Length: 231
Image 1 (cartoon, helix red, strand yellow):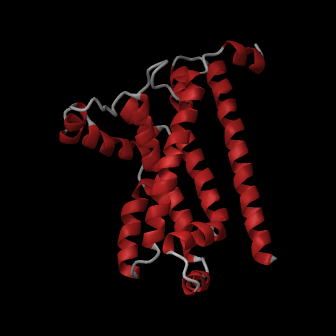
Image 2: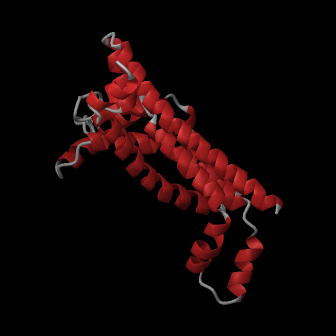
């Protein structure tokens, strides 16, 4: 059976679930990363160093450790998890719990990239806007963000790719339930465990295709940024 034949008959829920988890978590990480990066860039060096350690920890910790910490916080028997259950919110064994797990592990990529873009911003442009009577919000959205757009877009794409390929924290928090919480990564593992190497390989090819597009996008953004700098 060819890959195209498999694609016609396969249950594509893992693809749909992975894409929506990655997309929603990417939106959350985009705004949270920009907010933290903008204010962190303005902090004193020692305080920025402490904040960097805290916000970047998920990048260096094993994903399963991140998932374990999430279970400690949002497990059904934990205080936070029990409090959320009163309002009908449950992150364990639900697809939207995957959004939380993906956002946690993808956040450092967005934060570090956006912070680097903000730190390289020519502050004289902001000062010039202030002398013209422009508000800080106008300067941020119409001056600072366009000037830093290449770095921010690269961080967004990298965060999306990280969220799409997340396995460790996701499997710890939401597990694997076909039609409910299955993602591409967890599906590949389950198919491999069940000796369905053909099915696992097909899902690997799907993930490779998406990852290739993401990496090409990042390379294109970096090339444009270098061209703009050298112009």
